[in-house]
Length: 375
Image (cartoon, rainbow, N blue to C red; front, side, top):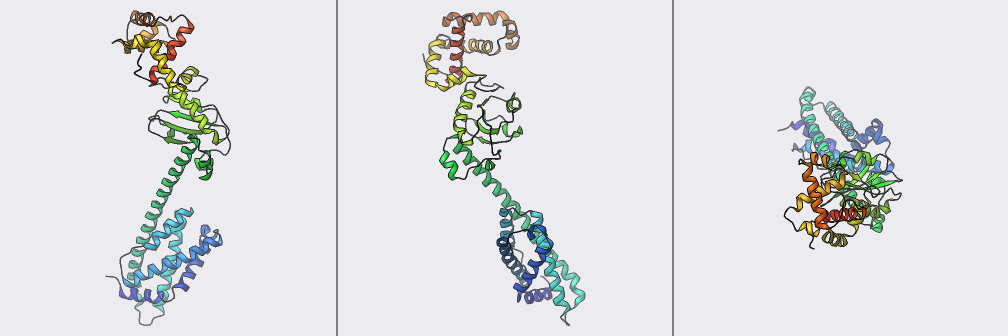
């Protein structure tokens, strides 16, 4: 049970809540730089919130009720939305509580029947309430900031989707901008497509990222070092540089084709310049399936197809000698030679003829895109 004498003083102060709120407002604007710099329209809102907060606080004291801090929580959320720093919000509350305490003391001193010596005890009660308000303000502010962050992230994802899917009108209607995505106002930009598990957002590139079911997509500022920063991170396709964000859809299509044409498990960050055949095959999946069936069909029908394709793929990708391949694949070099020879015999194509090598390479990529082709 609280001190009934403090309750009476609070009830008396409440009779002139507007006058006390005006004094509180003047003190806050005079003592806090953030509030002093606010435009008139926002200051008018602060004045109104001050009156509502003060009325809530005095009513809590007057009725000796448990702190609910409804208005204080609303105020904290509003200031968070406006970008007012939490430190400034708490400073304003401390100034306001000081004005309230000074008014309570002045009221007590003006009352000949009030036992002034009990004010020290009463102060503990008042500051206990103040602690409750401060906790409520801090918690609500943090909750609002977290929700704002979630909203910002959701907005970024919607804007990214509009760019990736080529919905330029939606991008404009939604107020899309480079700033909203955390990107420089001017290009060049790069579109990046990678496996979902690649930790693109932690690499430190300036960009916006979208994790999707089968891949993840990023738009990054082309600093000239992007490919080097992404190298060795995982299977990654990179578009050619482009200047305007509405061009992202075309860049995304190119980056995704490059990504799709890379071997599973690859650690390469590739462009269409470095992986042109893979991008070409990925661009025509129906044709890739037919080529795969026509070129590799006799191999794929065999029970040892996986072993034969492993050696062929390693030979194609590395350009290493059979001895070096054998060491990397943990088998004898004669095994490598025999398996490559078997592929030649089954397909009727020679690994010494460039045209045949190109056909086998395209078929291998097609097999990755369509793992179970039917001849």
